[in-house]
Image (tube, rainbow over all chains, first blue to last red; front, side):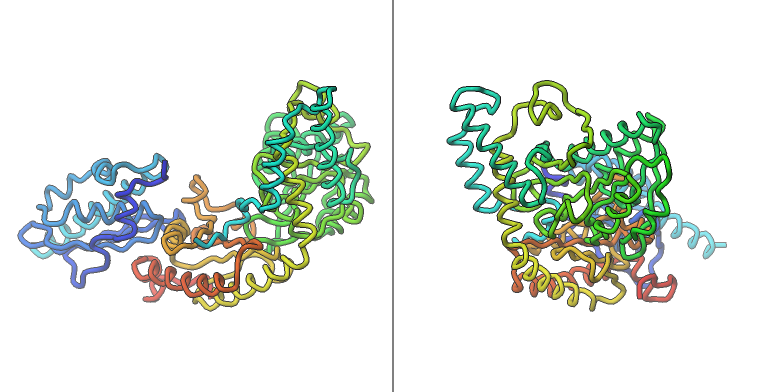
Length: 128
Length: 396
């Protein structure tokens, strides 16, 4: 059996939503260089709906694929729904990840949470 | 596909494949049987032993066949350690960047049996000096084990000089020559080697078979008990086709060594020259004291596993010492031992050549690798932070 599912390889080779967003409404960044993976998520939000999302990732194939899949899963969704995205959902959507790569899906969940948190705190500041 | 992962394993040569297949078809006897069919196998086995002994410049009776390099390392180290312990000597010297077959055996001896293992620091080029070994040897040192050449970064160690130091001080010297055998000249007499491990599949022989050379007079301890094969030191019916194939491969490799290593060196140097142009990259291992087929680089801002898989997509098979390819959280202990920090070690790439690689492939590699590195950097937040001056570059 191959290390990665076809879906992982597809998202690694043809990553969706790759890049950055200028004047993003929320930016999240998790991970560190020492561990070998960093994920950065950019969100564009209109009326509490995620209208656009982009990512940049330093990391292995499953980190890139997890970022790509996570952005797919939240694009067009309400912020409240995106906040509920779990790493399990990301891994399942990729038809599974090897046990020692599950942390990549955790990073994806955390990066999205981090970006939404950034959006919410900016919004709070703007409102106050 | 371009195969440049020959330090992991090599394709079987036609001569080795023929030897294996002829042997499988025609020599099915058990060398321990007294009848003529068994004795035919015993003869073939002896010829293989002789061939390998000639390649290493030792006696056939000093050659023990094993299942590969790891078994040979285990048996050599345990034997020397336990022989030492009987005389009250429990200090072992090795290096920080040995293969895990050596390091994990040493760790176990330290943990379970109270041996004191001293791992010498390697310098930033992946070398140690004979002086370091001389300085480390004590009254109670029972074994020095230092690899002939490093599997990841290709540095070639001063084995003859280290052997000389050990010989002068009366300490048993073992070398893991898995990466060197068939690629570099080895003469166990001139090189002052007491024990040496090699593995058949690293020089176009079959997998699952290796050799432990043990100088006459050194007591070997069994890892596998049973029948009287291998002078009673390694039980189990001999893997005759594997052994015969390995002997054919080693004979061929030693015969064409000069020609092949010149060709490999030229291709290696071309690739090193080409990849050195990638900004913020660094060659790993010594530039001169280097295996003829080894290219090892670190590229800042990217991760090795994604680099490997992208290269695979482009038809290049290579390897990396990143954590993601090592199956652990840490990147390669070899890269850490030569002072690469984690972040840099994650971005490593090893291309290991063989006689089947061509200059044309080298040109494709030096055209493709920079493109893939650039692509991965284009969406690496780490790289972006460096370009934007938010983080410092580590490699110039």
